[in-house]
Length: 455
Ligand code: UD1
Ligand code: CA
Image 1 (tube, rainbow, N blue to C red):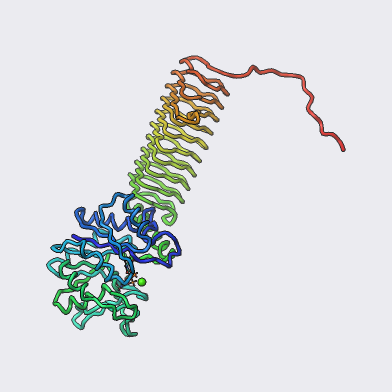
Image 2: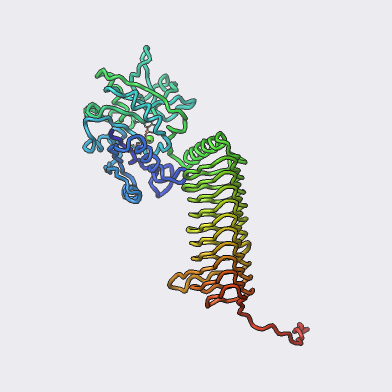
């Protein structure tokens, strides 16, 4: 099918230099949501995005996600009908054309699927919505026999028509060849002097083409975003939907109003998530995982019965079963922890593997390191991995004990079961089984403290 995404509007009410359709919902630009839904609906669809205001920014976004969508520029915004008309040369005539809005981000593939199925065999499918307050929307005018007669825009509607609560969501599907004919017949004789796409409804009725309506499963699917308020409301509705889904699935979400999922969160049985956590990208929580309050977790795989305590920040990391992380831990990209690993407060781990049963409980930086099994990393340990130009590897073998306040000047290796005395600055490899210590000999002197001079 052809899918036209209208995204040329200015979005004045967003009061932003960023084009409206690039504002994110749950971490993804609104246009990205619509594109993803389009390809979920029909991976082979011919997708055309109509851009106008901020077109160069929209184009660079499409390039950044390597979108296969065609871009059509609508230089002046003369209405929704005019916008679709710009896309006409890019459409395959022998197919249906689905019209979506770049600022109606959360429409689901299943609702669109339903619309497309209803609208087969030459009819026009229209997604409508019943609203308590229909202000601003085009009203669906029906005949006595309930068939659709027309869509009348608010600004052109009489008080009687304005009382109609069924509104046009703007999303519709029509056979492309007929759509093309209708579009070429549009005029701008209306209150806004615009080419209204909605005028094709009356043309369909005139031509005896059945107009079929259906509604989305959830009202937020068809909600449009024109302001930061509407953006926040839609974000809230979506987060609430995701939180309810987690609860239904058996996840203990301590407060469903205080969780944010910006991507895909998958949870096995008996997962608990305390308040204020943000999940970004793909996050997997295995059975029995406990996430404490105010953690930020991005693209991570967290194993069975792991506990992540409050205020931990985890990004592109894997954590083995029964490990204990935090509070205040930071796992950066490439942190790969085995089972029963402990990473405590103010410990930063980057591009480092830590094998089963090893511990770094307090105040450490472990970067570009390979740490074996059963290693104890003392407080204040730092891998000096960077010489100002290049990064170097630190290897700590199984069973090593790294005394507090040790600097490991990489590249360097600590042998199996080696002990490093507290305060060691290790610049050469430490042999296995031995105590290595670099330390100034301790001396004690008789010493008089200075006293404050009286004025
Ligand atoms: C439109 C519908 C109205 C419907 C409402 C739902 C028409 C005439 N009216 O009204 O029936 O209830 O949507 O939200 O279709 N756009 C362009 N180029 C243009 C004009 C608009 O690309 O020249 C895009 C906008 O970026 C937006 C969409 O089309 O994504 C809708 O435009 P908007 O101005 O918000 O339409 P409404 O007047 O609200
Ligand atoms: Ca408008």
